Image (tube, rainbow, N blue to C red):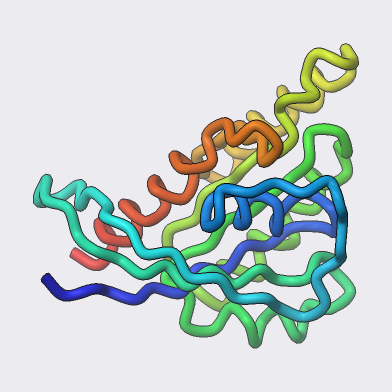
Length: 179
């Protein structure tokens, strides 16, 4: 069986947990130590993913591009996005402003890779019970996902909640888009 290589960009503001989600998925690890991504880091993950159209599995090597956060570098982000088969947008439950920034990232994705599969993750869901404001943030994220036409996946890089489902769902959507 041949292995299909697919580039996937992971975008969002600084410190939303992009690297932590990728490391949890690819390496099964979580670190409390935070190191900001400068530019882009690439990770590979080979897996078997269900093709929704055929019902068969396909081997895919996901080439995950962990892109530096921050809107001020949009010109570089455009360059990183070229050739992506899909993308993940990440927001942080503890920082509502990261949900507001999703419009910016979604607009860039649609400008560079229009119509390609995308998913939205609200990360740090393990912290939901710590503040009543976070329930409101969750509601904002659900409304934003609906407005953008994206599936919202509530993730926790710390605990691993919904991380395989996030990446696996996007991989299946990529297969479906390929036909």
